[in-house]
Image (cartoon, rainbow, N blue to C red):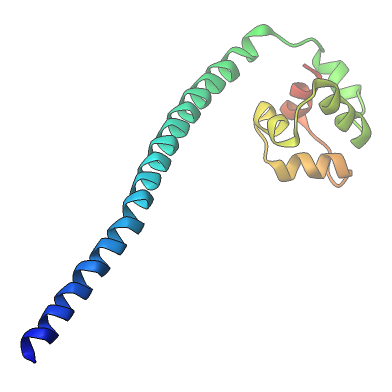
Length: 126
């Protein structure tokens, strides 16, 4: 009787290992593919980030379109800020990146809680 039990036990173990292998091999392939895709996306992001930094460094060299006196006298209302952003076709986040401010600051400007001052105001008119 002992031999029959051990035979059944070993057969169950063999079949269960086979089922597990059949389930996990495709999952391993999928995980490997996802890791490769993530690595590719990470590399693309690094490249885009580097290019964005280079573009940001080139922006101040172009010069300002408005004089400091014009900027100081100008009134940037929340509607004008939103309109400028929509006219450029960019999101709040992208405007934040261009002006060097946070998304919360842009949101506050567009809601009218705060007004851009100094250099940020210059960047919006540039």
